[in-house]
Image (cartoon, rainbow, N blue to C red; front, side, top):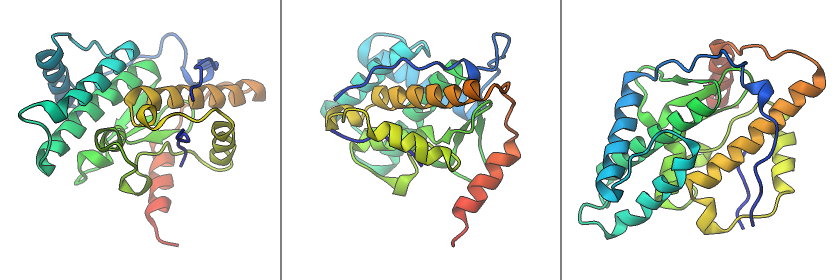
Length: 222
């Protein structure tokens, strides 16, 4: 699991072509559950701010701004079910922005809640839960026992963690934002792409069963 340290700023500027899958890579449709929640997020932000989110990475600061308004609103997410809905909506939107930026697929395991929905990248091994990220952004604290981290295989995880540790620290206010999480993700994908390019190998699609096995082992005690 990989996450950015708290406490500065870092520029996004790493090559990502090796994880892109080529110019003809189709985006495809999101699962209906995800699409409905993301659309609900677009409507909620439009009601609050008068602007329409367009699933572009540049819209993420607007999503962060929307969350800063919630504590002052009459129907703020003070109850757990309402907070859960806000986390699910904003997480689904964040995930859809990422899915349009990089080839990735949603994995919704039967019987599991939105918190467990994952985005799995197709051409570099990287997965994360957008809704878990949303919970941390919403609560402005670490939560969920690492569920909001970016999941990588070893030894890549350790190597990426070392590179993130060498970056300037970010402030607490920036750390718990979707914008900062997206920046960390773009940096991570850039480094993964660098590794593929340096190896001289062509990117190959990662089978869903490889992710399934990874998370099965992660959940198995010992």
